[in-house]
Image 1 (cartoon, rainbow, N blue to C red):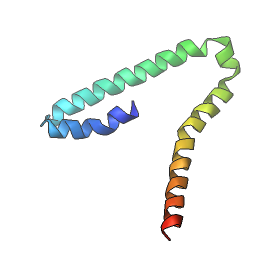
Image 2 (image 1 turned 90 degrees about the vertical axis):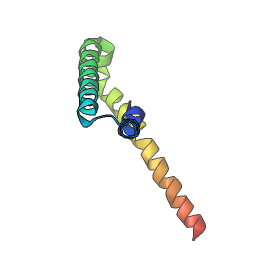
Image 3 (image 1 turned 90 degrees about the horizontal axis):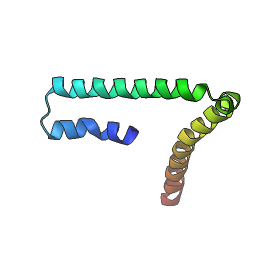
Length: 84
Protein backbone atom coordinates (compact mmCIF):
# COMPACT_ATOMS: atom_id res chain seq x y z
CA UNK A 1 0.00 0.00 0.00
CA UNK A 2 2.54 2.63 -1.05
CA UNK A 3 -0.08 5.35 -1.52
CA UNK A 4 -1.55 4.87 1.95
CA UNK A 5 1.88 4.77 3.57
CA UNK A 6 2.80 8.03 1.81
CA UNK A 7 -0.10 9.98 3.28
CA UNK A 8 -0.25 8.29 6.71
CA UNK A 9 2.20 10.72 8.40
CA UNK A 10 0.33 13.72 7.00
CA UNK A 11 -3.03 12.45 8.24
CA UNK A 12 -1.52 11.57 11.62
CA UNK A 13 -0.09 15.06 11.95
CA UNK A 14 -3.29 16.81 10.93
CA UNK A 15 -5.31 14.73 13.40
CA UNK A 16 -2.89 15.54 16.27
CA UNK A 17 -2.03 11.86 16.78
CA UNK A 18 0.63 11.35 19.43
CA UNK A 19 4.02 10.09 18.31
CA UNK A 20 3.66 6.93 20.42
CA UNK A 21 0.26 6.08 18.95
CA UNK A 22 1.51 6.71 15.41
CA UNK A 23 4.52 4.44 15.96
CA UNK A 24 2.29 1.69 17.37
CA UNK A 25 0.10 1.84 14.25
CA UNK A 26 3.22 1.98 12.08
CA UNK A 27 4.73 -1.08 13.78
CA UNK A 28 1.45 -3.00 13.60
CA UNK A 29 1.09 -2.23 9.90
CA UNK A 30 4.67 -3.25 9.20
CA UNK A 31 4.25 -6.56 11.05
CA UNK A 32 1.03 -7.34 9.18
CA UNK A 33 2.64 -6.39 5.85
CA UNK A 34 5.79 -8.46 6.39
CA UNK A 35 3.86 -11.38 7.84
CA UNK A 36 1.41 -11.32 4.95
CA UNK A 37 4.13 -11.19 2.31
CA UNK A 38 6.17 -13.94 3.96
CA UNK A 39 3.08 -16.15 4.23
CA UNK A 40 2.09 -15.47 0.62
CA UNK A 41 5.66 -16.20 -0.49
CA UNK A 42 5.66 -19.48 1.37
CA UNK A 43 2.37 -20.65 -0.14
CA UNK A 44 2.99 -19.32 -3.67
CA UNK A 45 6.57 -20.65 -3.58
CA UNK A 46 5.21 -24.17 -3.23
CA UNK A 47 3.18 -23.93 -6.44
CA UNK A 48 5.21 -25.66 -9.21
CA UNK A 49 4.30 -23.14 -11.95
CA UNK A 50 5.40 -20.24 -9.77
CA UNK A 51 8.61 -22.00 -8.80
CA UNK A 52 9.45 -22.75 -12.45
CA UNK A 53 8.83 -19.18 -13.64
CA UNK A 54 10.08 -17.23 -10.62
CA UNK A 55 12.72 -15.30 -12.58
CA UNK A 56 10.15 -14.11 -15.11
CA UNK A 57 7.71 -13.17 -12.34
CA UNK A 58 10.37 -11.14 -10.52
CA UNK A 59 11.47 -9.39 -13.73
CA UNK A 60 7.85 -8.50 -14.52
CA UNK A 61 7.46 -7.09 -11.00
CA UNK A 62 10.60 -4.99 -11.36
CA UNK A 63 9.39 -3.81 -14.78
CA UNK A 64 6.03 -2.78 -13.35
CA UNK A 65 7.87 -0.76 -10.70
CA UNK A 66 10.48 0.82 -13.02
CA UNK A 67 8.41 1.66 -16.10
CA UNK A 68 6.30 4.39 -14.39
CA UNK A 69 9.47 6.00 -13.04
CA UNK A 70 11.02 6.05 -16.52
CA UNK A 71 7.81 7.41 -18.05
CA UNK A 72 7.68 10.15 -15.41
CA UNK A 73 11.27 11.13 -16.13
CA UNK A 74 10.59 11.14 -19.85
CA UNK A 75 7.48 13.28 -19.29
CA UNK A 76 9.55 15.86 -17.35
CA UNK A 77 12.28 15.84 -19.99
CA UNK A 78 9.77 16.46 -22.77
CA UNK A 79 8.19 19.25 -20.72
CA UNK A 80 11.56 20.94 -20.25
CA UNK A 81 12.37 20.62 -23.96
CA UNK A 82 9.04 22.22 -24.92
CA UNK A 83 9.61 25.20 -22.58
CA UNK A 84 13.13 25.81 -23.87
